[in-house]
Length: 110
Length: 113
Image (tube, rainbow over all chains, first blue to last red):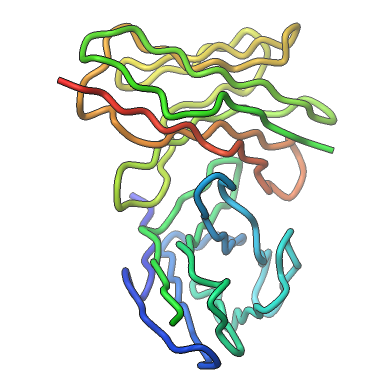
């Protein structure tokens, strides 16, 4: 079975802190994705990566950056966390049409 | 561009009731269609999919048929259980592209005993 893991299930940070969310997949997938999920808005794509060191902006990249130094790992970085970044963050990967998701990280920024 | 429209929730049903969650789409080309389910506190997981017109995807008693003429992929289940309470997402992926899905906003299903 494909497994996508995220470093934390719950995270509480202060405004202005630098935040790292880590995601690891174990199926050698080329593509990896970061989404945020908010009530009434569904899933919104922040960034995706189709190869090591490659990244593309999604629909809402402002305030975020990403890093993919190894094929299995895709990190989301909040350079200076703000309260409007309080959300559920979901990582996903695929090498075909089906996406495989991690369990999510619920981030609270105070 | 691509878009997916789902009925807004929550959908509230009693156990053993019939479920329909509507999903319509617009797409360039001929997409594959998906239903994902998100149980409380978890990420999304694939429920079923269909890759071409008139295909029926099915899993765990859920079914959906790819209707090209009505650009729809409605999710149905004949008899829901409390354990089906979750958020359901309809999605499409264009074939031969970069496999970036377009998701609907999700429909919350609440099943009462």
